Length: 424
Ligand code: ATP
Ligand code: MG
Image (tube, rainbow, N blue to C red; front, side, top):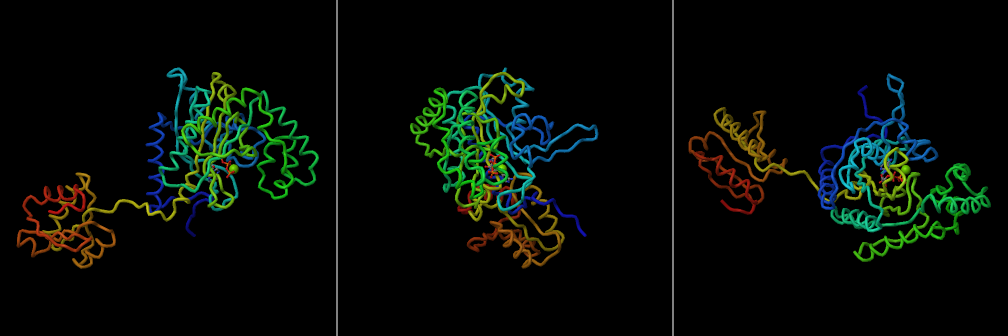
C-alpha cells in the first residue's frame, strides 16, 4: 500500500498555490507599507517556551501541542503559534537595542493536535504581525487598520472586526473573582470542561462553544465594567482613533481569546461563511509577555491570520497561476532543434514558453497549446523552414502572422513582453 500523508496535515497542490502566493504577497506588500519586516523562526522550540507564554491551563498547552523528547531527552514542541517564538528570538538577539519600536511579520506552518474538520487542521498556516515597544493606543488602532486593510486588499469583505479589552494584572483578578462567583451559581448547567475551567481559567467559559454554557452565561458580568482607569482610558482611545480613521468595528465583551498572555485590547476578524471556524484572524496586546520570557519590560501587540481559512473564503474567485506566453509547435529534427534553442533563449529571458518533447503531430501539439492556455503558438514545420517564415497564431482570435526566421527571437521577445493587445 502506498504511504499517505498525516491526518489533518494537507498538501497545498499546484492548483491552489496561486491563491496562497497571492495571500502571502499581499501580506508582504501591506505589512511592508506599515513598516513591518519579516522574521523567520524555527518550527520547533523548547516546550517550556509555550508553557510559560501561552499558559498551562489553556486548550493549546493542555491538549493541542505536538510535544516529544529528542534523542538527548530534551522536550521539544512543534510551534502551535508564532508570537512566543518571535518574542523568544526578539529577546535572544536583543532586537530592542536597534530601535525603540520593532515591527515584525512572519508566515509559516503551525501545529495543533485538534480534531480535523473544514477550516481546522493539525498543520495549518498563519501570517502574523507583531509591533513591539509602544503601548500608545494609536498603535492598537494602526494594527487593526493594517488588518482591515489586508482583508480589503485580498478582496474578503464579508468579515467583521470585533474588539474587546481583557484588562491588565491590576484589574483582571477583580473581574475574574466576580466571574467565578457568577459561574459558581450555575455550575450544574456548565459542560464538564467548563466546570473544570471555573477554577483554572474562568474567562474561557465565556468562549465555550457548548450551547448549555452559552445559555448559562447569558448576563455574565462584563469585563468592560471592571477595567481599571488605565485600561478604560486605553480602550476608549483605541475606539476614538478607529473612528477617526474610519475603520469599522464592533465591541464584543465576551471575546476572551485562548492564550493567557493577552492584556488590554484583544480582537478577532469574524466571518459567517466558515461554520464554527468563524475566526479568520485574531490577536491582541501582550504587555507583560516579553518580561515574563526574561526580556526587558516592553509592551507589544500582534495578530495571526489563518491562511487556510483565508484561502477557503477566496475559493472560486479565479486566482490562477500565469499561463505560458508561447507554445512552439515543431515538426522534423531540424525544426525541433531550432525550436529547442528558441525555447531556451526565451526562458532565459524570463518568457514562459513550452514545447512538446514526445513527437506528437502538429495538430496534437496545437491541442496541447490550447490546453495549457498559451497566448500564442509558433509553428515550425518543414514548410516553414523551406519558406524562411514561421507562422505565429494568436490563440485568442486565431489570427495568423508570418514571422521571418531570421531574427525571430528578437521579434518574439518584443511581442511577448508587450501586452497581448499589441499588434505586430
Ligand atoms: P479557534 O477558536 O478557531 O480554535 P484560536 O483562537 O485557537 O481559533 P488563534 O490561536 O488565535 O486561534 O490563531 C489565530 C488564527 O489561526 C485563527 O483565527 C484561525 O484563523 C487560525 N487557526 C487556529 N487554529 C487553527 C487550526 N487548527 N486550523 C486552521 N486554522 C487555525
Ligand atoms: Mg483553537
